[in-house]
Length: 138
Image (cartoon, rainbow, N blue to C red; front, side, top):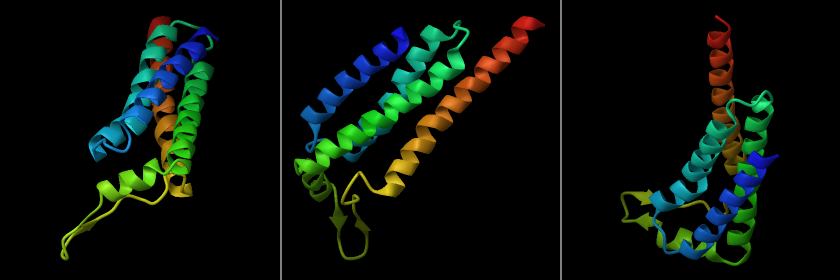
């Protein structure tokens, strides 16, 4: 339970930072805040709980916390208009090339992507758990 609380605190700090930085942040910064930092938090929590007997279950609970973080941040950004401003600032069109940011971070494709990213990362971590358990028995 301590690991989940630690993860929630890390994601809450990340949420506050994201809300302070949006919409003035670049696309790279947004990708880092939305996708990379939650994985780093999960990895740090995994390394802390690695020796725990129920670490596989905890890894997936960390993935769920990251997905909830993404949904909460997306709802806040979409509802206060910050995401629209971010999308407008980071869209580009010169006639030949067009780059645009999705109108809403809450689109089903975005949620599915985050689900696969966070839980796929969790699955990879459980493979390391299994390998370490196998190596420790031999």
